Amino acid sequence: MKRWHPAIKAALIAFTAIGIVSCFDASPAQADALTDIQRKGVFTVATETANAPFDFVKDGKIVGYTGDIIDAIMRDPVMKGVRLERLDVPWSGILPGLAAGRFDFVVSALTVTPERSEKYHLTTPVADATVAIMKKAGNEAIKSPKDIAGRIVGSQTGSAQLAAGQAYAEELAKDGTPVKSFKDYTAFDEAYADLAAGRVDVVINSLPNLLDAVRARPKVFALVEGTIGPKKYYSWAGRHGADQEALNKFIDDKIAEMIRDGRLAELQKKWFGMPMEVPTAPIKF
Image 1 (cartoon, rainbow, N blue to C red):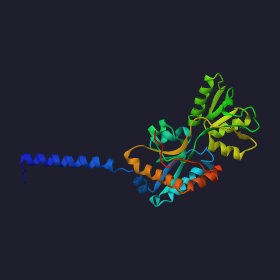
Image 2 (spheres, rainbow, N blue to C red):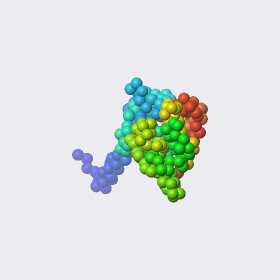
Image 3 (cartoon, helix red, strand yellow):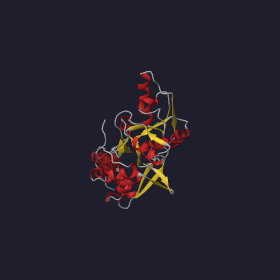
Image 4 (cartoon, one colour):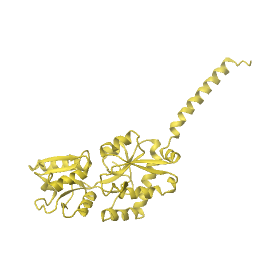
């Protein structure tokens, strides 16, 4: 049996140990979400479907503005052989589910905020999300945003629209004209139903959503002239991390491409009745 000099033997043991550690260290560096999706052949995304015309269920399928965008993206050669799986996830679980890795991406209308941007990768915007107010048709007592003073206001639990409404109410209160109360809902459809029934006086949501609601039921709802707060946008969301960069960049670039070539504007006219100006890159804070 060949015997090694003690010094050589020690060097060989150390070299082998380094090689083993290097093998383990290489795996995370090689991890890539987009490559993994291509390998699995499935891109799993979450959508909140109680949000027409962005996302809603028709004949058992999730359809809407968002669906048209993601369908166009899935036709890119990068996604050849990859099947899109859309999960219907309630709003309250959509971001926690992303953080927990239950799906690859959130493909649903998500208002861009600094707080969300810190926790998640927010994509190139897909639509305007500026906040507006809807009232019952024929209600002449509410003509501008400040007229919500003394009224019951409805919006969605945990939404950026509810936060914007509450911030605006604080400004009204400083002038001595507070809002009577806020009523929040699991989904905006519930708020619309209560508005139609007279259980709330107005509903606060994004302008595109309210335009769609008024267009669908013009004898029931009407838009209050004016908006609340600064310009806002909707985006989708992915996770932060080196292993997510390729996937995030792919989605960002495809949305930007659709903005530049006019396809996004055409889809906006289809679903909202008008095109919108949106940035061609993710918003940075």
